[in-house]
Each structure stands twice: as C-alpha cells, then as structure tokens.
Figure 1 (cartoon, rainbow, N blue to C red):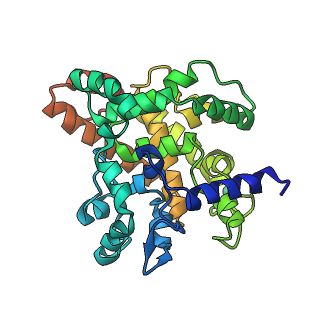
Figure 2: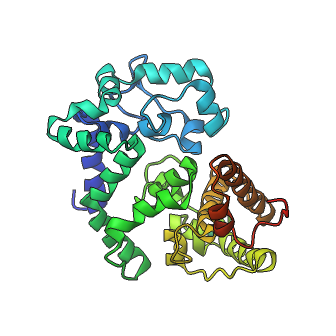
Amino acid sequence: MKHGFWQDVLNAWSKLNYSRKDNVTDILDSVLWYNSDILVENKPIFYLKCYEIGIIKISDIVNENNEFLSYNELCRKYGNVIDWVRYYGLIAAIPQDYKNIIRNEDFNDIELATFYDNLIKKDLTSRDIYFKFITCDDSLTKIAEKWEEKLQSPINTDFRSDVFAKIKIMTLSTKLRSFHFRLLRNVIFTNDKLKSWNLVASDKCTFCNIEIETPLHLLWHCQTASHLWNQLSTWCKNHANRTMNLTLKRVIFCIITDNPKDCINTICLIAMQYIYSARCLKTLPNVACLKDKIIDMMNIEKYIATKNNQMTSFRKRWNGFIKDQAI
Ligand SMILES: [Zn+2]
C-alpha cells in the first residue's frame, strides 16, 4: 500500500473500528456512520439525509454542555431529517461507556484536575474550556502548513493562537462556528471526497458540473460562487457603503478586516456556510436569500444586544447595515 492517501484511509478506518476511544475528544470526534461501535440490529448504520445535512460525528448531535440534543432540538438545528424513533435508536446505539465519558468530561482525566479547578474557579463555561483545548492543540501547526500548501501563501505565526479563537469572537451562532471550525479542519465533505468513498456517482461540482468539487472550488473558484461573491460585494457597497476587499485567503479565514468583531467578517462566514448548505440541498445559491440571512443574523444580534444592554457595540459592529432609525 504505497499511496499515502489510502494508508491514511486504512489507518483512520482501523483506528475508528478497532480501538475503543477513552477520552471525550476522540469520542465526540467519532463518525456515527459505518462505525462498528455504533450498531443498530447488530449492523453499522448510515442515514443519508442526516449525513447530507451535516450530521457526521457524535459531536454533531450534542449541545455545548455535551448533552445529546432532544428530538425537537435536533429538528430545530437540522430540520426534519430523521424520525424520532430512528433518532433515539441512534443515541441508544452509542456505547454506554462512551456516554458515561461524555457526561463526566470534567472528571475523567486526573492529570487535568488542576487545570479544571483553575477554570472552574474563574467561572468559565464548557465553551471556554473547549476553546482553551483547541488553541493548545499541536495539530494546529500541521493545519497551518496544509493551508499554506493549498493557498500557496504563508500563514502568519498568529494562526496558532488566533484563528480558532477568532471564530468565537466573530459570531454567536454555533452553526456558523461549527462550519468554520470544520472548514479550517478540512472536514467539509465535497464530491471529491465523497466520490473517493463511493458515496456519490460523480466528483463534479454540484453547481457547475464541470470542475471537480473541492471545498475551495465550491466556495470560491466555481463560477456560481464567484458570481455570488461579486453580487454580495456590490450589495455591501451600495447598501452599507462598505468595501469588501475579497481574496481567497481572506474569505477562507474570514479576515476581510483586521477586527474580528467587524460584521464584514461574519458576513463572509454566513456566505460560505450558505453556499455549502445550498450545495447540500442541491439548490443554486442566490444573493437575495443570502441578504435575508445576513439581515436575520443582524436582527438576532440586535435582540440579544437589547437584552444585554450592549447596543453601543452592536451599532459599531453593524455600522452601515443598520437602516432602522428606531435602533
Ligand atoms: Zn463549480
């Protein structure tokens, strides 16, 4: 087996199938489908609709407190992609020792006890702990190297400490955070990968059906994406007098401006997630729908800012986009 890709596949496969996970990160990272640890009627399972909407790993069906989503929460997050009997059957199929470890996340690793103590004393949430972990991850250097190769452009040294922390600052939406995290971790599934796993018939792009569908093609190089970015750019200029200086690297990392709190960066993330979800739904993205999503996000943030008495920072963040004089 000389090809590095297939070695990686087999290594990953055997790791997935033949080793029991004993820590919460690995368990949450476990793929639900075709996993010999997760059996329904003694068989590994694969639910296509769930897979297509982005339910891939155990982490996709738990909330930020590591509790499994209720059926209603699941429907709110992903739509009606599975009936409740199947969904609870899926949860029941996850091994009990995995569930125990997920539930007792904070108390499993004795070596980390002091670390947790300190965090708890500082009254931080599980979300803060999670971000602490991901910014400590040695693999970030490897991720940066991979992106340098893909983008043919150097990634500055701030990447390691900065990039994942920025996701948190950029948006309150867990859906957008999750998407950006998966994109940067290279776990966005497009037809190039799906075809190599024999899950789709063609590796061609869902939108143009000409080029091979990679994440970068789908989100940037494809004529459909390119047209959408141009329209979005024009709208931002006409509607809010904001210039979007777009390049592939800036778009992927959502660093259109230096300030991660600037809504322009969030708009870029909303656009990428929208393009990807249109691909999953096999529809063409259009700028009218994208504008609605951006305005919806602004209104949600306005509501939260009103509740938390943070209207000053809200106005600063959405400068130019706020048209309602009553705000
Ligand atoms: Zn295309």
